[in-house]
Image (cartoon, rainbow, N blue to C red; front, top):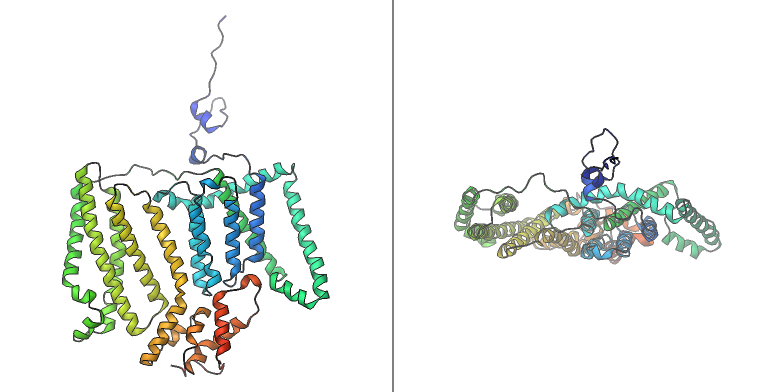
Length: 505
């Protein structure tokens, strides 16, 4: 008697690991099932412990209302937790190092806007540190995948916690934390009441215990716990960035070479006819009748800045669509783009000369300084493009572009931008007697040491509003170098609170 044929499951069902029911057509597995399957079914106990420890450290240290050392401590906790895990060999540790370097700026500088930029840059570095690749697509998708990993890491960590504690792991951890806090509150309160010096020490180290502080600390704990768990999940189960929907489309050489050739001709004509005005600077202004500093700088700087940004976009588009299969096609690409980049560097230099002359005549502001730094960064990008064009392959270029932006932000923080702007305005006041009180009054504690060099009533006008912030008590984790320098500078000079800025103009 013949045996019935053996029924086999479709290949799609095997790949998707979904049971196939009779009469149902198997579905095609999705991108997550094909490219992002967890290698470990649950988180290991060290992963959970490191994540909880880093989150507790950040909840204690992080001051949300002011820049301070707690931001750096929290960043060190997150970076240490990720580096201490078992699969750190796959982590791009240099990105973590760059992120921690950026998070030293809240300790060094009192400007809150600089802290916000540092946190944003550190977030980009954190996402890149657990990314699998170095291509532009990988770096663009890294923050997206990191955010998605939060939702996959929480149940992954929950299964690990449950398994580690025999079904009661979460309860045991919560009970241990609660008992520790209870011991701290009861015995700390009793000892603080017994000795005033010990009470002052607790006030310096511990945060205020009230409803608002507890809510904020719980929120910080949850965010940092999610960050560490998501990074741990990506280290354990790396994700491939989604592939583009269609392959890269190329065009003929003439289709891209003619438009770019027109742009090169325009740049060459502009540079040739504007050599004197581009690099003449102050001498050109003085030699040209009816030409003021404002006309020289304002009339061209912003247009040149836009031209620089658009040129980078054009180079990126051409590099994507230009064919490069033959030696002739590669020669065309490298030659035309090389000339374009060189001319663009000349235009970048001209824009920087214009803004430098304008700031020297009308004073420095944060906006003008930030735009100058952005223009310098674009010049670095053009140099990177030149170096990449000189080589046949440049897989490092996307990482270099992102890394150079983060390094530029770190360099800006080390420059101490608010103090730099204040020093230049004070020097201009000594030479011309003119002072931009409106802008200087918006600067924060970093600018105080420079502003103390002003005479009265300008000094008291610009420094009186700083006294309230600098006289406030701070915890240990709220310590900030910029505010500390400001206190020392104010202690050396007198400030009259009665002066107003209208009399200082």
